[in-house]
Image 1 (cartoon, rainbow, N blue to C red):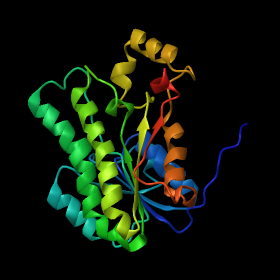
Image 2 (image 1 turned 30 degrees about the horizontal axis):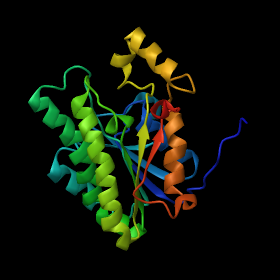
Image 3 (image 1 turned 30 degrees about the vertical axis):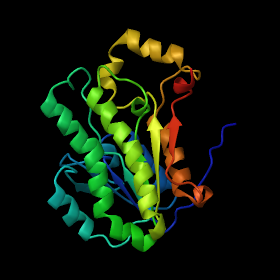
Image 4 (image 1 turned 120 degrees about the horizontal axis):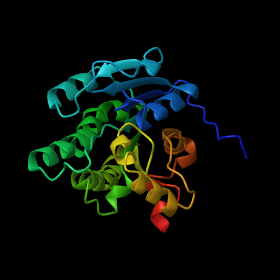
Amino acid sequence: MTSKASFDFAGAKVLVIGASRAGIGAAIARAFQDSGAAVEITGVEPECAEVDAARFTYNQLDVTDTDEVYEFAGMRDHIDVLVNCAAITRRGEEMAPEFFSHVLNVNLTGSFRCAEALHPALSAAKGRVINVASMYARFGSPQNPAYGASKAGVEQLTKSLAIAWAKDGIRVNAIAPGFIVTAQSARARKDASFTSAVEARTPLARWGHPEDIAGTAMFLASDAAAFVTGTCLIVDGGYSVV
């Protein structure tokens, strides 16, 4: 099979938080735009990746700055789909308490901060929230303890918001990617033995690509998932079932 499932998001307003670089967020943003949605993206950098500069409305946004996030959210009264993808990690450097706290502030509290600030806009649209967790939410991570802890928190936050916001018609779900080829994983991929070990354990025998996550995001945002909320879908090529 070579064809991919298609979704129609014509007229939908989609906001992807954390899509300034060529990674999962950007791939999700492109997929929604290609399906007809009006897509905005954010990132902490002053500008987004050159390849996407002409495609999207880009907003610089620091998800750790509460005032900035609420000011940004206050200018939007209708959001159909919110994707929380802003995240940082630094393999081998996360035992430092200050940096540990910073990772949690970006990855976990930042996701909550954006979702809560945009709650009125999501309520107006009976929208959908898609948080990006990680398989490290369920595995120990000696080189990335802050990242793993933050993503476990994202999975739990997803369940809690799904319950709290169901009365508003908002569905909240998460995706837990496995090992994906992104700028964020570049440091880890320099370790040839690690890269080979991942491929050897993964039943589909490869690292994933950002586009492998985009289809899952679109499914969760679509009416095909109208009875799905509070779940976290693992997209890892089978790594976690071995």
